[in-house]
Amino acid sequence: MSTSLQITEPLIESKIYLVRGMKVMLDVDLAEMYGVETKRLKEQVRRNIARFPDDFMFELTKEQAEKLLSSQIKTPSRSQIATLKRGENIKFLPFAFTEHGVLMLSSVLRSEQAVQVNIQIMRVYSKMKELLIMHKDILVKLEKLEKKSDKHDEQIQLIFSYIKKLIEQPKTKTERIGFKKEW
Image 1 (cartoon, rainbow, N blue to C red):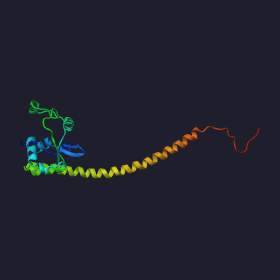
Image 2 (image 1 turned 135 degrees about the horizontal axis):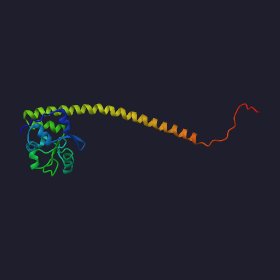
Image 3 (image 1 turned 135 degrees about the vertical axis):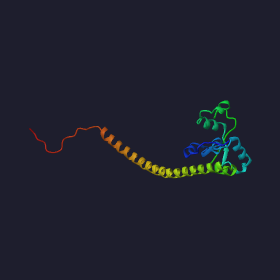
Image 4 (image 1 turned 120 degrees about the vertical axis):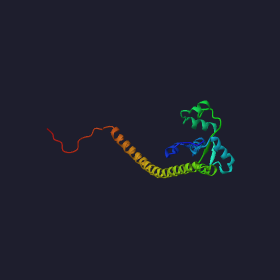
């Protein structure tokens, strides 16, 4: 099953999901990009299961699969209309591959297309890590600013409370101080 699917960076990014706190790609998406049937990809993984520990690959639960796949249902192709729609009545639970699992797939699927797609996927993961590191620095700076502003907010609130007390104090009759002219 060779595919004419153009593998672009935005396409790869759109196929990376956050599941169980890990960035993963699903077997169905990887199979489509590699130009193989999902069934064949899973076969190769099962034959080489020792290469895929839990932190490389795991099977989604039915709830996770339904939630994830239903959020991305596409218009079904003609062949899908006759069978199951994506995300409905899931027959086989999908495998989710972490970055290391995707990398390991290149040693299991040895086609030229699989190697080229893996290189692109690894570049996207690297780019995402760089962005995360850069954003982490920005996040740390924002947290510092927020802490400073929290202190400033407390000080401003204190000033406002003093001003309110001054405004609310009962006015007492005071006599003028200074020289009084009598007429």
